Image (cartoon, rainbow, N blue to C red; front, side, top):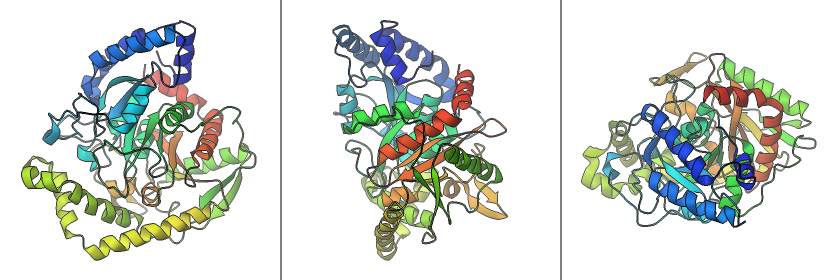
Length: 454
C-alpha cells in the first residue's frame, strides 16, 4: 500500500479504508522493516491507534480537515509530550518531555497520527546518519550508501513508506541532503516561518524546521498545515513566464561529472516546460562552508555548555571534537561570520529581483558510500561532510527557502537531488517549479521508487 496524502484523504472520504486500518498497516510495516533500517528510535503504537480512533470518529461525522488520519513521524530532536525524545544521544536516552513542540501541537490539532520518532545523527551534529547509540540509518535504496543526515531517519522512513510525511530540522542541509540521498522531497522553509519552539537546537542562527514527504503536493499540504498559508499545486503543469536563475560561480564548481550531466538535463527540462533561463552572478560567495561552520560550531558549544560540564564523556567522539573546535573560535571570527551573513542575505535577495527561482544540485557529488570520509573531485580532496553541505549551507546562513526534489537515479540506481531556491516567503514559487518538474520528469522515478520499496 503506497498512497499520497491526497489519495489517503480521498480513500477516507469514499470509505475505502479507515484510519485504524491504515495505522495498523503502517505499524506492522515499521515492525517488519525498522529492525534493519533503524529509521525509528521509538514507535508510538498505542498513541497512534488512539489518534486513529479519534480521526475515525471525526471522519464519520463529516469533519474531515487538514491532516486528519495522516500517519507522520518526527525527528527525535522534536519534543513530544509523554514520549521518549533522545535527540539521537545516549545522554537523553530517558528524556520524556512534558509538552509538545509547537509544530507537534499544530499537526495534532489537525488530526495527524503519530507513528514514532525518527533516528538521527547525535544532536544533529553531522550530515550523515551514523549513530553509535541507536544504529546507523540505512538508505532504503542501497544499504551501502549513506542516507544523509542529520534528518536521515525521517527521509529514509518516507522513502520506505514507513510514514507519509515527517518533520525534520536543517542547520546546514539536514533536511535537503537526506531527502536527496533517499529520493524524496525536503523543504527548508524561510527562516522562522516554521517555529523551532520545543526542538533541541544546534545553532539559533542557522536552525530551520520543515517537512519531508514523498512528492511536492504532500509537502505543500504539510506546509499549509504548519503555516496557515495556502499552497496550491492545481494547474501548475507549465513554467511559462517563470525565470530560473543558474549561478555562474560556486554552485557549478567542483562537481561530479554524473551530477553535472543530470543538472544539465534538469535545466533542459525547465526550458521544455517554458521557463526562461537567466544567469545570475554569485561570484561574491567565498568560504561558505567555513562561515556556516563558524556560526554553527560556535553556537552549539553554548547550547550544550551545561551538558558538556556534567556529561562530556557520554558524547560520541565526533561530538567531543566539535566542542573542542567551538572553544577555539574567536569572537572576531564569530562576529565576522555574522557580518557575512547580513551581506550575503542582502546579495542573495537581490538575485531574486531578476529571477523567480534559482536552481542548483542539492549536492556536488552522487550519494556516497557509508564509510566514506573524504572525496576527490577534479584532483582536489575534500571532507565528505564539507562536500555534502557545500551547495545547501548558504541558504541556512541567509534564511532563503530551499527545496530538494529528486533528479532521478544514477547509473548504480541511487537517487540524486535538485535544489530550488526562492526569495524569502516565496515557497509558493518553489512548489510551482517543483511540481511542474515532477510531473514532467519524475513519473518513472516515482514508479521505480514504488517498486523498490514494496
